[in-house]
Image (cartoon, rainbow, N blue to C red; front, side, top):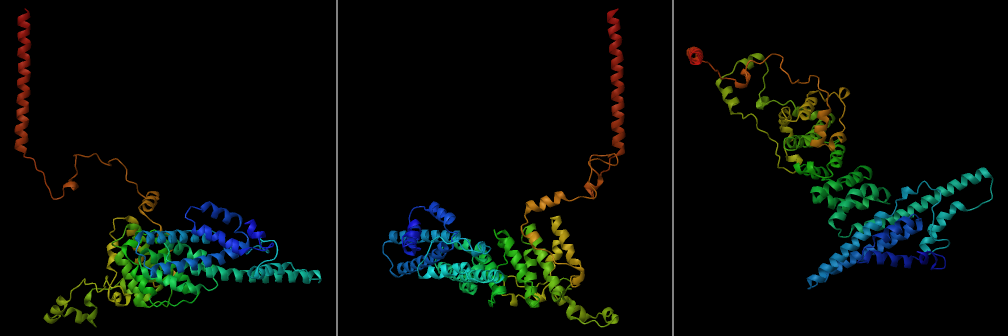
Length: 497
């Protein structure tokens, strides 16, 4: 790095620095210690970060071109082809490691001065960066009050210019890197950290829409990971994605309740369905889909579903009819009590032809519009009243309240139930204070080994004659034993005399 600093007449030697990064990225050996040393000692300087982004963009473009050339020239040797793929994958991992180690701009926004690694002068690109950082140090003769105000303005101006240039290079480096065929583990790690480490510092976050929509269309866990960043682009940056709710509906499968990132997914699901402009048929489809899943998932998943359904019913009063819908007699119009009492043969035939209990909801339909959720009812909620897990059966009772009266009800924080498991449910249950504790003693002395309630429907009658005969036999046997005892004692006395 001393050659980088002084090798170009005291200016930052970007060519040498690019060769250093090129050697690190394309090395077949482990250079993690070198990268860590570079990150800990030099990435705190703004000019080093600036030229790191420039070099990483160039290296990403070279890797992209290398991958395309390998695809076009199909090599006959499979060993050489697999070796080239392995080397490209290793280079991609090292490139991501370097990019992830560069500190973000927000870590340096509080500093009034941006520290530079090179001492003086620079190349054309570094000159602009250096000039912007020195504007705040320019000395102009003026009164002290005006001087302090102008210095603060210059510092703010220089910080804005530096931030703009850094964002531009940061955006180019990351966008170029995300175009590459990333390994699966790196791909998932990027999706997890994208909304936190990349999107806030891009000059134009909409540039990520192609990458995120492709990821969201893959399905499964990858779609769950891409949901957070895609939701930010839609809500904060005006991205339009017509099939968003259809793809979100397709993610509601039983396996999602066992996924690693399920807590974040359920929080985002609750946020995505919070808009009051959501159509009633769409809200009903999500409520019905969740209620159907509640009878298939573990108790922790059922608790999350109850919280989501509670919030949806409260936000959309028009779908509360799903809770209190009667059987198929709704089509009959009863205008008076007399008409209800008069039932002729034709009416009986019509009523008998109606098949109660038919659910019109199509669980296998991927499009929520065609699921017929508004014609269905939440019979699954009534089933959960008899759930074997006490917290679930108690939670269902909250849905019996009138959720249309928003003043008397509050939304449930889904985050409190997202990380639930059997262990957390058991821990909360044993910490509950029970009003009446069952004690280990009998209030009355038991008269038999088993109580009559243990043998409901059974009667046991003993015959008294048998008992009397058994008693007489026992008495006779006792008398005979006593007589034999007396006789034997008398014989002993005679023999002794």
